[in-house]
Length: 239
Image (cartoon, rainbow, N blue to C red):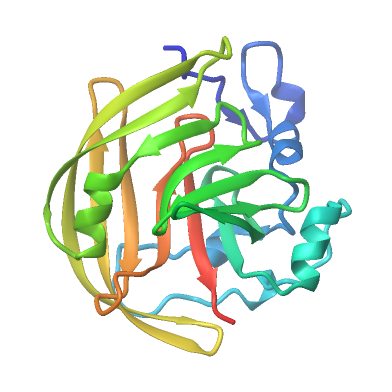
């Protein structure tokens, strides 16, 4: 399909044309996010209970590349921070909130890769490769934030291999996996873990959301960003 990309390969020597994309090339695209192992961040949802903290990921980590002036300004302004993990690469780091417009929040990395969220739901990426150009996740968001089970349809538009935008629809089933307790830094959260299983004839994926039932806020999540980059782990950093 137009969205299909060569798989990621761990060894750059394996990245012959058409075989796979070197991890180094992907790291360059996503801003070298003050890397720490992804598994330290996230948080298998297979068992109930508490999840590990990631104090090493908080702002102030050393990076292998200097941050952009925009990112540095956001750090100086103490802009809200978002922990982002890339499951396929086992790495994670911190983004800062750059723009809020019409309910959409854009978060930026040190070299200007971005993710855009709407009420905590991933709707777009830039700078990751084969980006998620836009999404309509309103039906899923209504169920997840109300911690209700049900069915929803979502729509994703991806940048394909020929720089053509392709829109795909997915039928999703949202269900509750019960209460979960989280501690992030000094903050404790009583959440409900919501699972969203989505698919169409070509693709299937599962999203997970740790939702504060009182506010509907998504405190932590694992959300699919497309077949190329795979799932992203997202977690708000309390002030």
